[in-house]
Length: 207
Image 1 (spheres, rainbow, N blue to C red):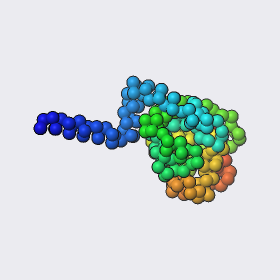
Image 2 (cartoon, rainbow, N blue to C red):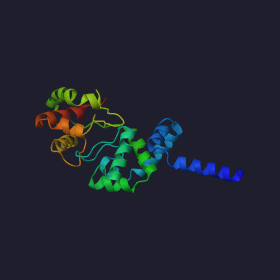
Image 3 (cartoon, rainbow, N blue to C red):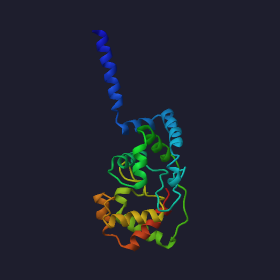
Image 4 (cartoon, rainbow, N blue to C red):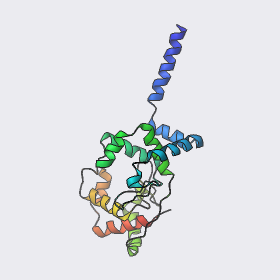
């Protein structure tokens, strides 16, 4: 009888570990220097395919692709989950995310979150100050004073002009791939110049 009880406890413990909340796992890794270092190294190895577009250091190789460097790790991991389960859609990301293990997704999120954003040359410096005004009006309440975002909201600081412009235009056009009702509501009010000005401001923003 005692053996049965012990076996049952072992199986229960294993089930609990298997059902561990991945977000809590990610946060536990972040709070441990040893686990964080291990995840960082694992993430560096796992970014073989990510690096072709987003860069090995998380700075995108094409201006239409977002930087992942310094992005909130919880936001990154959640994005992987959403691409993997179809909540978000992208030809490349959907297949890639679906092929990754949970550990790979967590490790990549940790790795990219620890990279630094490399500043790009600003396309239209004259629009930066105007962009700041529009950003404070439309975006700051959610994305933060410094554009750093949060666990649920992406970092915008340092993102390429073209990526930000395309994203806002897609929300404004009610692109079905862009499902955030809040972003759609904000974007539908924006004029082309406001979008362009904010895109330049955000690329120049690197707190």
